[in-house]
Image (cartoon, rainbow, N blue to C red; front, side, top):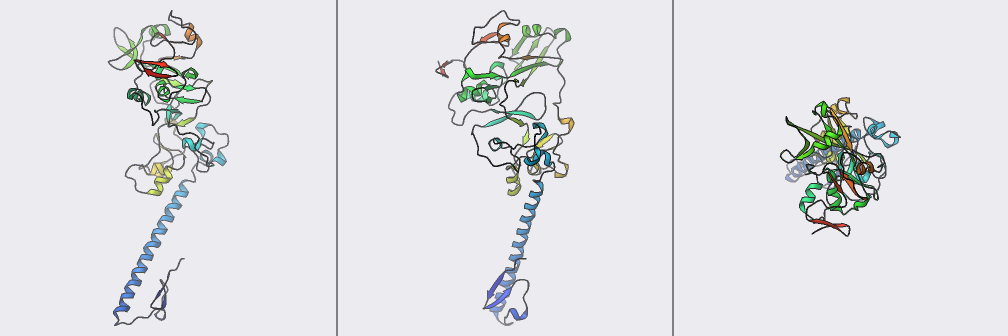
Length: 375
């Protein structure tokens, strides 16, 4: 226990352990009463300071208990070992500081690049995505429309441009070709991801690719792709899949809440929320760590470091008909249900029924000297 010592009027006074012989004052002396009041105020101040220090220590103790992890084999680098991505709740590699998904005991590493990354869902597993470049550079000065299309204000009128692509020369994946264009990436080294085109209510007698490709079109009034028959409109849904030959993609955990509510006041918890990753779940919601959950109103007793099986797969009505489209396929460029054949270096776009080469996203722009410039 810390004891504060004061020297008042030449007499030693120890707060909390004084005696009549250790402090002298005259009952009728105003000076003595003044110093007695001061001593009492100092004692009260000391007690308040001690309580504040104790409260802070308790808060730090609670934080240290929270960050110890309720599933060490999923959120401790020393114990994770060779667990797969879906079997761990954080990362321990040299890129984790860059992507801000390090376990609490991960070795601190320098940030390797500064391009902003977005966690893009893909495939059929809920909660699993890929880090992609999903915004234009901060110093971008090009057309505002291109920036909007890059940053997810796109309703897919042109699936070729809307599909994610990976630059195989740099191993950087972009949300779409609009983002490629505003970053000035080299189009010749791009590989498109595979598109799944799925229907939930298409009649059985229309379940063949020849019919779908013949009648599939974009309908501006509803801003959707689909098939319009005499009776009704059958919309389709797009989802994306990473080609097997593209391996340099950083997986991520989608829809994870990583910040506190704006009215949260505890600085310690807020800093902890933003400092490390150990994903926890509750009722389908995911948080970066326990502190992020608590500062968003969750009861820590209800948190789990594993997802409920109910929330592991994407909950949706299954497709009655689905087909995969690969813009990179040479077979796609030479065969199919279109009589059109594309020259070398061009790709057949079955959606818009034309051959695609190096072209710009916006009208009145042409590709010149490796960049899109206004005509």
